[in-house]
Length: 138
Image (cartoon, rainbow, N blue to C red; front, side, top):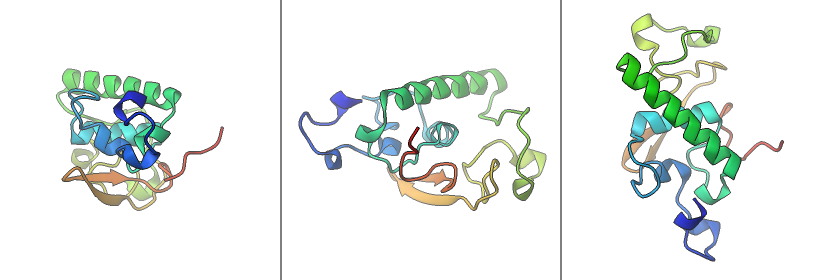
């Protein structure tokens, strides 16, 4: 991703990671739902500058996107991991339980209210608890 940001530019010149994931020069095939769900599963806030995403986080994001897309092809939809028990505040009808955060009111993992963020002309969804704006220190 470093080559995507202008050489020698400040991080302000780097697009938000949520924007970068829809740029076909960065990754092909990751649509709005996949980017939303993958960023949630990796704990990365969609507005974080892409230049502040570590190599380890990019790798985890790539692996997560691949797994989601494979599941999507196999099952015909992007779905949550059926073995994961939802938070009691996020209990939904079975037909509404396809996504972790996309289009949801509450986070499936922690029960926090989901935030809707306009990004790239589309609606992004993020959990402020599971996807903090600042990266957690190891």
